[in-house]
Image 1: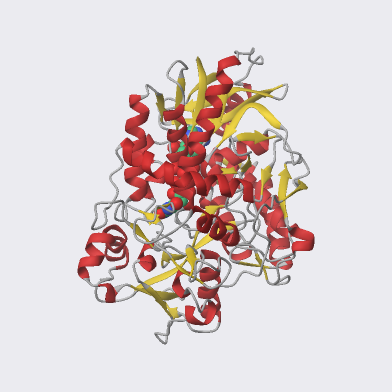
Image 2: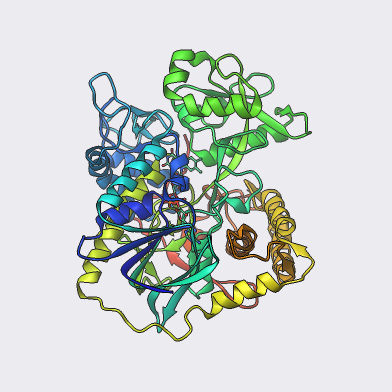
Length: 585
Ligand SMILES: Cc1cc2nc3c(=O)[nH]c(=O)nc-3n(C[C@H](O)[C@H](O)[C@H](O)COP(=O)(O)OP(=O)(O)OC[C@H]3O[C@@H](n4cnc5c(N)ncnc54)[C@H](O)[C@@H]3O)c2cc1C
C-alpha cells in the first residue's frame, strides 16, 4: 500500500509531536509510531524541564547556557546551546498555554527545583567564580514527561495530524541524495506500507536497550540511528552515552535526579555522604557523569553494599525529607522502590546503581534540524531529525538533567517550522522502483530462516558485554574486546531464526529487526569510543584519564563501512563565548 503525505514524522515522543503541532494545517502530516503514541518513552520522564524563568530565585539564560557548556565538557556547540537556553523561557510558557499542568509555587507560578549541574554564580558580579545550585527545573510532581506528552498529543490531534500507531519503520528511501519517504510494517498484519513524502523527520528516541541495566523502555532500540547509518549517512559522537547515577539496583528503573534535587543524598556502606569528596561545592547535585563515576569508584573501593545476588549498590536516602514532601513531590519514584524492591523510602534508604540512560550522540543536524550529510555541514534535502535521536549538538559529552525535555520542545518546534518553509516550494519526486524490496526480503528471510541462533541469545550477550566493556569506565583493552565481540555477534546474527512464522502481531519478527538495529548502533559507539583517546564527559578512558583539547576538541562522525569498521571523520566544536576550562564542581 502506498500513502502520500507532505511530511512524515517517525516517532510520537515529545520531539515528534512538538514538530507535528508546528506543521501548518495546509500540509498533510503523518506521525508513525511503533507504540501507541502516549506510550513513547517521553511519557516516563520524571524530573522536569528546565528554563531560567526566575520563579523561585534570580536566574538568567546565560547562567543556563554556561552550565550546559560546562556540563557538556566543552564538546557542545555553543551557538546551538545559546539558541536552546535563550528559547527555553518562551518554550515553557508556550507549553503552559497549550494546557500542560505544571506544579505551582506559593505565588501560583510554575514551580522550579534543583537539578544536577544547574547553578548560578554565588556572586552575580563574578560570573565565573564560585557557583551554587539554582532552582531551574519546571515540573509536574515526578510525572513531567507524562503530562508533556499528553498535552502535545492532544494538540497534535487538534492540528489534524494523521497517526499510524503500531507501524514499524524499516527503511528510509533516499534516492539521488534526496529523502523521499519511508517503508513500514503494520505490526498488526505484517503488511508493508510505503510512505511517500516530501519531508521526513526522525524523532525515534534513544538506544538504551544496547545495555543490560537501563532506564530505557523496551522500544529504545535506536532504530532511527540504525536506518540513517545503514543508508550511508553519518552518526555523530556515539561514544558519549550517559549513565544515570540512580537506577533501582538490578533493575535499572530510574529514580529521578529530582530525588536529589529535593534534598536526597547518596551514602556508601559506612553511611558516609561520599559526594563531599568528589564534588565539594555541589555534592549530590554534581552532573551525572561525575556522580556515576563516584558511585562505581566507591564500589570498587569496597564501600558498596553487597546484594543477595553478589552485585553491589550504594544508597539513595530521601527518608529525612518527610512523608509530605515524598508523597507530594516524588510519589511515583518512591512507589517504584516499594513495588520493585520492597523498600519503604520514608523510613529506609533506596538501593541504587548507575543505569544506562541517554544517548548524547545521534543523527547530526544543524540548529534547524536539517540532517547533515557529512562533517562539512552539507544537508540532505528533505531529511530532518529531532529529540534524543538527533545530535545538534547541545549536550556534547554529557547532558544535564532536564535539558532533554527542553531539547525536544525547542528543536521539535524549530524542525516543524523549517519543514513548513521547505514545503512551500517542495514537490513530490518520483519514488524509486521497488522501494519496498529491501523490507520484503528482510521479512521473508527472517520468516524462513532455520538458523540456530536466537534473538534473545545474541541480544543478552550484546547487552552484558556492552555493560562490562563499554560502560562507565573504558580502556583500550576492553574496547578492543568489544570491537571483536560486535563483529562476532553480527556474524552470528546472519544465522538467527524466529519461532513465530505468522503475520499477526509478530513481535518475534519486530524484535529480530530491532536487534539488528542495536548491533549497528553498538558498532558506531564502540569504534568511536576506541578512537577517542581521552576522557571527556561520559566517556572515561582509564588509560587516558585527562581531557585532551589539543587533539580531541572535535565531534566524531562515523560512517558505515561494509568491512564492519566504520570510517571516522571529525568536525570542530563551535566555541562562542565560553573558553574551555577545567571542569570542577
Ligand atoms: C525513565 C526516564 C526518565 C527521564 N526523565 C527526564 C527528565 O525528567 N527530564 C528530561 O529532560 N529528560 C528526561 N529523560 C530523557 C528524555 O525523556 C528523553 O530523552 C526524551 O523523552 C526522548 O524523546 P524523543 O521524542 O526523542 O523520543 P521518545 O519519547 O523515546 O519517542 C520515540 C518514538 O519513536 C518511535 N519509534 C522508534 N523507532 C521506531 C520505528 N522503527 N518505527 C516507528 N516508530 C518508531 C516510538 O514509537 C516513539 O513514539 C528521561 C528518560 C528516561 C528513560
